[in-house]
View 1: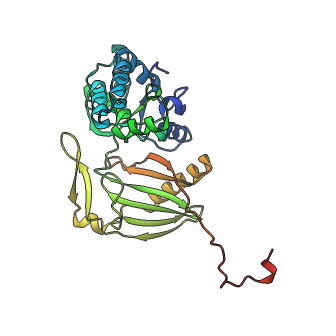
View 2: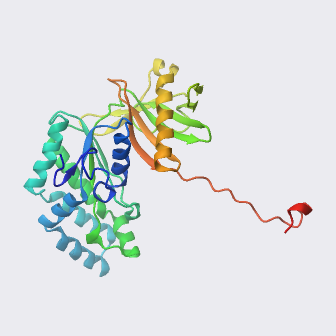
View 3: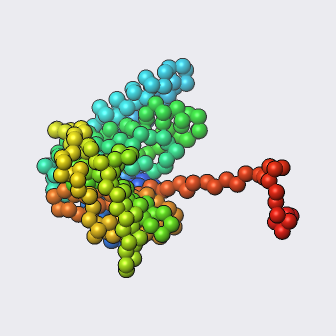
Length: 325
């Protein structure tokens, strides 16, 4: 059921990028199409506006920007704005709706990730991510931190140069059930010609370059898979109570392939479906839950194609007569 300030992928408006941000809208579209995405919800752009208005942050932003235009350092100005965001209380009705949506995921003790879900990339907002949160209080604090990320020194400086109104900028926030890839694996997948290239490593995050398992998968009724076992010397895991750290992998982990053939075929199928859905090449970020063994799609991003440049022929290059204009 739709909330006033919270949307789930299945809700009406759950794929509206203006309310939930581009990343969350893309995941919601794919979840509706049957691809496995972590359960969660988005604190919407309207929620950001409600918070900023009720907390009286507009005058704070305007005042600090006047100081910046009068010569104050942008780093100090941006820090002052972010501090005001982090110290302001969320409106009670908004906080209650966020906590109610968290309760649907399991409530206190349920591990979630909270991350920024920008509406537009041109704000140059740092993609804040808060992992391994286990309480409603932590989620509310992380939402304020994500809201505040709109006013990094880089974002403030760039908006001043490009002209968009600081007070018109918004920041939706995505809250998702944690995929315990610290106990499993993670990596990327991308389609290239007739193959899907998959990178995989143990633990959290994108595997280090030169270290992961590499696979080439030709999807279809008779799939063909090429495997290259990487060194996988380290992996990233959660640190208690928050944060992450890197540890060595075990000899068994280094000797094993991360993904089975069935898992590779599932990732290849997802890659093909995602490229078709968005009608352009995309890169998938995936994670494997260590307890259930399920694969989840964590993020999709547009993939720039390499430019092919044909140089003008030099006088030393002989052009066949049939190709001359």
